[in-house]
Image (cartoon, rainbow, N blue to C red):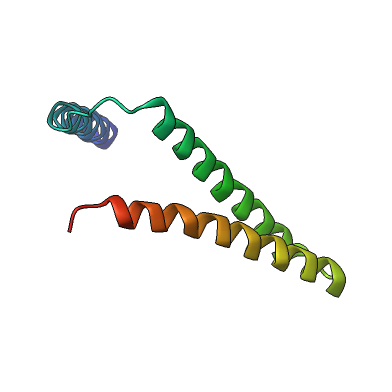
Length: 94
């Protein structure tokens, strides 16, 4: 019997989440994104993924020279990512 109550609760939670997602989608009308902005977004996401991968490698690295190389690569990615932040900051309304 408890199992039936539990499944109804889960089903109800799933329905609520589905309704919530639908409401959010309806309320967030997105303006079309230009191809240049799409390319910038893809580039930024690629840099973030690369940085995450390098950070994971850095955690596992044991040799000092390899660690140094990974740290330099992360620093380079951070500088490239800071350009995206500067552009975003300069274009956002104040």
